[in-house]
Amino acid sequence: MPVFKPLLQQIQTIFVNKMLFIKFCSVLLLSLYWCMFQPCAYAQKVKPALIFSHLAGDYYVYTTHKLYDGAPYPANSMYVVTQAGIVLFDTPWDTTQFQPLLDSLLARHKMKVVLCIATHFHADRTAGLTYYNSVGIPTYTSLQTYDSCKSRGEKQAAHYFVNDTVFTVGDHSFETYYAGAGHTADNIIIWSPDAKIIYGGCLVKSTATNDLGNIADTNLKEWPQTMKRIITKYPSPAFVIPGHLGWKKNTALQHTLKLLRKHGN
Image (cartoon, rainbow, N blue to C red; front, side, top):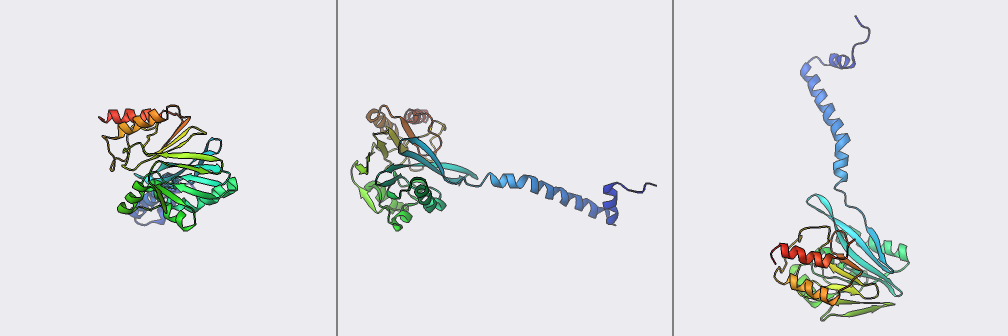
């Protein structure tokens, strides 16, 4: 008779009832599965922190995320570094990143945020307005967005402008432009003439997507005409920044129009 029994036989002798042995093996296998695979599945649902991308000169994109259908989904915003301070185009979507954004910009550029403009009433543009009001940053939207935020229960800016407006901050100027309804009735874009950047927000769809995204508040009839007005007014942008996903190609305006035509508009 062998001196050493196989390992499983030694374990089995511990249990008088063979059913206990089977249960023990089942629990052991489940524990191994949890240790090996569940951390990976959990990690996939963790939202990335702030992501910064340089565009040109003093212009940058910053990206935050929210979980959508169980996976992190990105929202793009912009900022410009001026001699008088930093200007934000839209706020973080991720509500945990309002102050970390300010801290990161101060550490990166040794400048404070002096102005924030939101481009429509949805939370992926306006979520941080109340917080930035509370820390003394002037916040602006169009009057239409201001009223929509109030009626929809979204965060509201401290100030509003009635017509298309040119803002000059330090050594940079940029203009807001309302071309018409589209993603929402109030959506505006921001044009930065020195760098030829169109910040489109959610009115503009990334070339990385083939659908129109959230259309709950969309005017599908007017959206194509709105896009045509922008293309006519700004025919040669160097960058076109959509509200979500990538911007490697500067043809997002034409791509949005193509998606609308596919949708039957």
